[in-house]
Amino acid sequence: MLDNLKPIDAYFLKHDEPIKSCLQFLRGYILAHHTAITETWKYGVPFYCYNGKRFCYLWVDKKRQQPYIGIVNGHQINHPNLLAENRKQMKILLIDANEDMPIEIINDVLNAAIALV
Image (cartoon, rainbow, N blue to C red):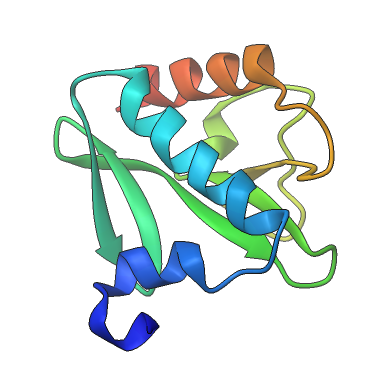
């Protein structure tokens, strides 16, 4: 079934619930956040561009089994919910797929990431 889909669409459908629904929500939410945001498939990851420049991506943390929004220039953003861990440039915003979406936090992080582009 997933073989006939574009890789980016297959990525969102291959996960089990509740991660699948969480990723699909985040996909739509990011794309609706601003008219200048587009989606692309790079490095096996769904990336989001603002005016053609990559600013974030979606992924699932393998150890935690939690989806996250990766911020390309996250090292330049000081936000208490962003984690650098062992990354030099990027930071991540972990999302608990079993909880309500932290919309205000997502908005803050997306707006900060867009401001850097």
